[in-house]
Amino acid sequence: MSKESRKFMPVQEFIGLQVIDTKGSLIGNVKDVSIDVESKDIAFKVATKSKGEMAFGWDDVQSVEDVVLLKKQIDTPPTAAENTPDSSTNQVLQALVICPGCGASSPARAKFCSKCGEDLKS
Image 1 (cartoon, rainbow, N blue to C red):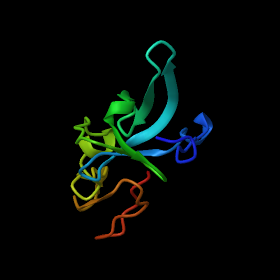
Image 2 (tube, helix red, strand yellow):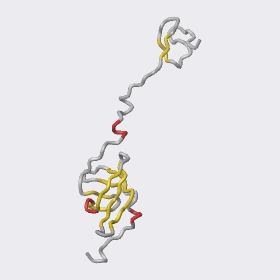
Image 3 (cartoon, rainbow, N blue to C red):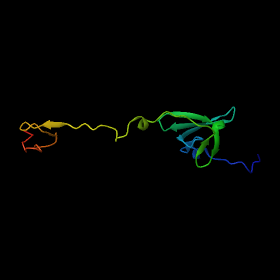
Image 4 (cartoon, rainbow, N blue to C red):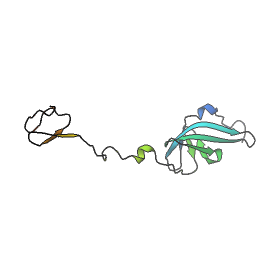
């Protein structure tokens, strides 16, 4: 490769780039770049979506432009948000109070019974 066709990129420009695998999945963002001075190899430390870290050598990288595109598919552990059921499946527990006059149940925040009008806060 001639010196004129080589592309140089400052290390600071790698920091924060998204890392994408061959499946198109977002793995995380580049957190740091390391260089092995003996073998002249480059490695990326990636902060993953699941709040962990992974490392990828230059041999794992297909290309670098607006993102770092890897040569392989990566299986990452699910994030905490993916492990938690969404709010539509969560059951909402509501405190109830029983009316002393008629026995009807009303929300605990109610001041009066919705059925008979009895004072619930006394």
